[in-house]
Length: 324
Ligand SMILES: O=C(O)CCC(=O)C(=O)O
Ligand SMILES: [Fe+2]
Image 1 (tube, rainbow, N blue to C red):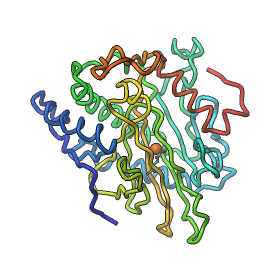
Image 2: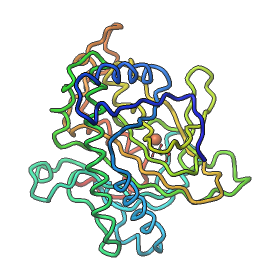
Image 3: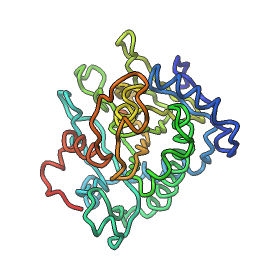
């Protein structure tokens, strides 16, 4: 299902080519998108198709394994590993999401100073030895998203009137999380309020989403309050503003609610990457400037903000002791 969409499609090939002169035009388009719908597509993103295809194939094979096999890498307190169906409940939702997902983050050894210091969410990933293709494929995809995120945040910085390099020192050991998500087909006639992902805003700075060709992602239109489709467009990623960027920018950019309903009759897959800063990055609107008045938010670290949201959304965090 390839569709038309009213959401903007921004060609970011100039960023991938490293051309400094490409930044202002992309930044202007991003500013318009982020003060408008809060969602846009990027084309010309520079991520090789085989990198995407390999990650999708390895994740699909993993999801098709028996539940008890996948449970051997069940998510730990660092959010790494397999999250079974039923573990994610969006704030205000009636039912848990109809999805399972496999989540990775920055690969840090146990003797990394941040891990030794007990920084939450830090450490090595949980790679399944029974699905050996996952590690190289998702690892390469993760790295490609780190690089794409870095290119995009340069343009985001300019779109907020900052130096292009503003975010770089805040992404030394980023909390970026990449999760392959698997949605079983939803029965037709299922209850209205059953979702693949219930309406929510993303927690972090920017989300970079690959989706397969089934469709199902819907975005709330700010003006009408209605839901519009964000259909799959080949060769693109969907990008959206998360709460952390809303807060940091003093609501100049706002995160937009979205949801997934998989009515395709088939299984659906996506890979969401939350391109988030260092645990200790200080999110202070004053630092970005507040041209339209007072700062609306107190400073908070990126890590604290994300942990607060995790504790609300994920069942496993309510049953395991917090660990480093
Ligand atoms: O799978 C999708 O299309 C979107 C997933 C999503 O919104 C999320 O994981 O935050
Ligand atoms: Fe989301």
